[in-house]
Length: 338
Image (cartoon, rainbow, N blue to C red; front, side, top):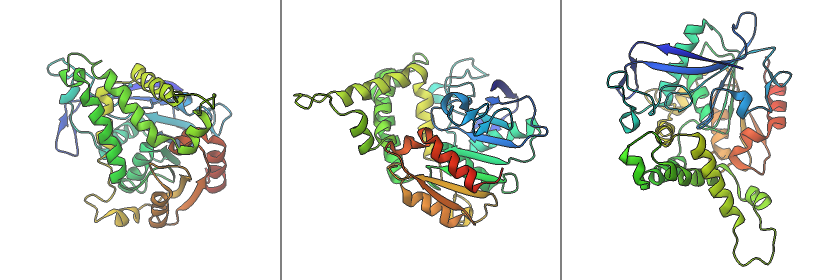
């Protein structure tokens, strides 16, 4: 897939009343034009980028289920991220300094507004499939509500209709970890908060995985060891791995964006909002997901007209949406008509 940059040189008005003087959107496409091809719009999750061939390479690529030679596949980096779109590390066009903690709150609806600007810029008038897992699913369900005639099919994987107190608690625990790093609030440069980000990632990982998954992958090889350490090393490794590729300020604002997720806000409630969806919808739940348990996916399927719910089995919890590609592609092929 090829990377592009779209610059919107006009004020971008945010849901909370704030304004970004201009925005940039980094995005990838599988071809130069959507002409003559069905359009698949992939919405990425929290710390992913706009190239799904990197983070979903089991599903996206030449000859794979989302065939980059057959379909026009597009994925846009969300506002607030550090992978090319406008975010806290971006330079303010007025003072020339990075926004950092002066960056405004970005909501899920703001992300959809940015997607809409890009869609109009590219001349796309119909999306044959919008798909996303986790916070990517937040974007998809919001988009199918705000623009019901646009999206023909949608697939919501491991997400919900409104952020839960459980989810917000995990998000706040991660923000507390960021703030506990004195370099984060000092804002001396864009690399502040690296140690806090490592800790935040460690916290997040507990919500992404499962008891069984840790038992399978992080059990001590020595049954007689005095001090269990393997899972400790794993948590540290994952923390360092994220801090090496991501920005703490972007992470802070993206976790805040998760807490804005509420499809019913200003629409008469969640159930009324979901009832307006016109897209043929497939909801895929993961049986071991503790972050978005089965009950939340059932709720989506029950209140979206004619939606279908499928449950996939995984030992890897919420992260099964990235790993269980065979089960996901099988459910897509069975349920949705592309």
